[in-house]
Length: 129
Image 1 (cartoon, one colour):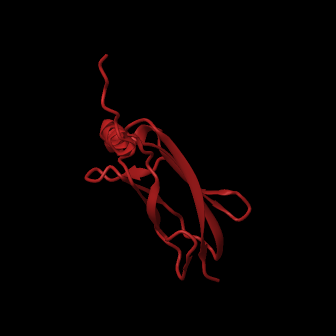
Image 2: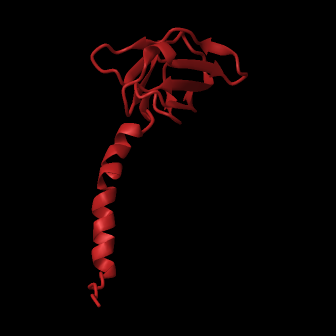
């Protein structure tokens, strides 16, 4: 009768870790385009009305399916429509703003990354009184 050596739990864990490595390495390619930063900065108070809202994302975004709106405290659209996209950096989206009066404004964005994942969010900024 033939006996087989018993495998140690550590060796089995090591083997499973090596087998799962390609899936872990591929995860960043499946990530969504999240908001990296914005100008005006999310939650900030600015002294003067900004001329534009600029959003930077963690991945390249698809211009045809990405939008941004800015609304006032009452929910009225202040800036909506066709944003501009940076041709040298596919992660940047801008929208022109009219002169904003003092008060709170909400930026609402929805983007589709080039890997087709949808991401959306919103933040506020204030124009000082």
